[in-house]
Image 1 (cartoon, rainbow, N blue to C red):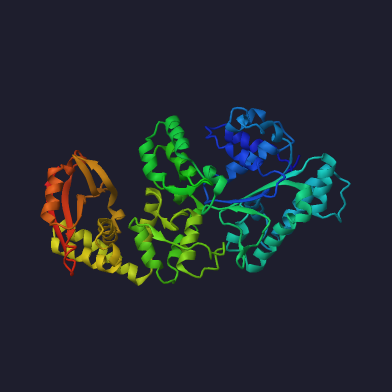
Image 2 (tube, rainbow, N blue to C red):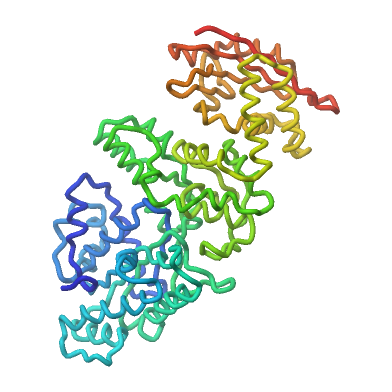
Length: 528
C-alpha cells in the first residue's frame, strides 16, 4: 500500500533469496503478546546482531497487503498452531528510524515521521482531512479495514545515539513515541509493537521514559533469548553450507552469554561475523567494517576510578563484576566505571552474565579489538602496565627466571584477595594480568589436552611472528623443578608438534606456606 503503512514483503523476500538461517520462531513469541497487556516489546541488541532482519521478517508475516505463505510455509513458524491465525492479518506500520534521519535533522524528526505516516494514510483515504492527527488517522484506518496495527520500529534509538542530537531533541523524540503508544489509543489501534535498538529505552530518573513498553535487553532478554543472535545449531548449519571449520568459527565468534526465562544459559554468536567469515572463508575481526565501534576507546579512556584497571583485566581475559542498574541508557549520562562497562555490553564489546553480574570479553574477535585499543588507552597506570607486560615477555624469552618470578609476585601481591591467595586459579589470573598484552604476539589456549594430561596455559605465536611458543605450568606449592618435571613426564610439548620454531617451557610456583609468599620460575628451551 505505501512506504510506511503495509509496505509488503519485498524486504524479506530478498533475504530468503540467499541461504537463510531460520529464526522464525521469534514470530511465535510476538504472537503471544498480541492484544495482551505486554503487547509492546522493545528488544535491544548490539549492531549486526540481526535486528533489521527480524524486523523485515515480522513485516512480511503480519502485512495484510500481501500473501507471504511462500516465504514462511517451510519455516519453523509454520508448525505453530497460531501460524495461519496471524499470517497477513494486520495493518503494519513500519518505521526505520535511521532511514528518516538520513533525510532530516533530529529536531525535525518527529514532525517528519508524522507527516510521512499521514501521507500514506491519505493516499489510501483522501478524505482524511489536514486537521486530523496521526492517532486519529490510524484509528480511522483501523475502523475502516477492521484490522488492528502491528507497529515495527527499527533502530528506535538512532536519535539518542547520534552526535547531532541534544537533550531537547531526545526529549522531543521520546514524547513522539509516548504520544504514539499512549494507552488511550494503544488498545484500540495497536495489536502489538516490536521496537528494536542498540540501547534500552532511556531512563527518566530510575524509570523507563516510555513505561508502556516491556523491555528485553541484551542484559536480560528473557523469552527473546534464543533470538538474540545465532545459536550453536545455527552456526553448524552455516558451516555445513559453506564448508568452513565449525571449531574455528566457535573460537572466533562464540562467547556471548544470555539466559532464557527458565534459567538456561545460551551461548550466542554475532550473526554478521559468522556470515562474513563463511562467505569469505576467512576468520578475522569484522568489526572494522561495522559502525558499531562508536568510539569505544573514548569510553575506556573516561576518567573514572577503576576503569583503567578494569580494561587491563578484561584484556587479560579475566571476568570482572559490574553493576548495571544505574546506567541511564544514553551516551552522555556516565557517572561511574560500571556505566562505561554497561555501555560496552550494549555495543557488543563485552558479554554480561546476569547470574554472576560479571562481564568479560566474549571471543577472539573482540579480543583482537581490545588488544588494539589497549595501546591507545591514556590512563597512566595502564600505560605503565603495558610497558611492564612487554618487559615480562622479554624476560621470558631471555630466560630471566628471577625477573619473571618477581613480576608475577608483584602482580599477585597487588591483585589477589588474601582469602583466595592459595588458590591455583588465582595464580592463573595473575599470570594473565602480568602478560595481558600477549595478543600482540600470541593466541592463548587454556587447559589444552596434550600428552597424558592438560596443559595449564599455552601461548602459540601468531602467523609470521618470530616469538617462541610457550607452555606454562602453574603450581600453588611445590618447586618449579617439580612443575617442570610434570611438563616433561606428561609430554605436554606434544600438543605443539609440527608447529616449528622454538618452544619455551615455563614452570611457575609459589610457596603458600611461607608468609612472604615467594614466587619461583624455571624456564627451559626445547626444540620442536
